[in-house]
Image (cartoon, rainbow, N blue to C red; front, side, top):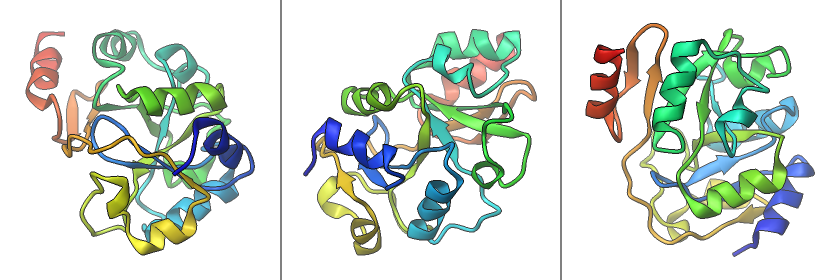
Length: 195
C-alpha cells in the first residue's frame, strides 16, 4: 500500500487513487482534470450520465468550487466533516464531465483521518468522491477487497483498515430533498424539517 505523499503525487499526475473514508473506500482523481475524471468513470464502468461528487478537506475549500446558499452553508457547518454529500451549485471551474453537464455538484468532506490527509495534501484541488467499486457491484469496505478492474486502474491505494460500510447520505438542502438515504439520514431529515 501507499503513503499520502505518493497518493497525492499520483493525483497531481492525473492518475487514480483509492482512499478510505468513514463510509466506504473512495476512488480519487483530480476533480478539475476532465481527463482524470474520465479515467475514473472508465475504471468504474459508470455511465457518464451519473455524476460524481468532489471531495475537499473543509467547507472553506468547498466554497472555491461551489456557490452555496446561506442555508447550505449552515447545513455544511452542522454536518461536515461527516458521512454526507451536499449538492450545491457548481462554479465554472468544475468540469461538465464530473457533473454530467448539470449545474449542481455533490460536495463531500469525509470524517476520516487518512482521507483528510490526502485532501489536504492536494488542496486546494478537489478530488473525485465516488465509491471505489465497479458500478453495480458492492461498495468496498476493505482495501484488500478491491475489484481487480479498480486495482489495475489505480496508481496508489491507501489502506485505512475496515470502513463502516454505510454510504453517505446525498442531500439537496435547497430543495429539502434526500437523494440517497445513508448514514445520519434521520438527523439530516430532522434538520431539514427544522430549518
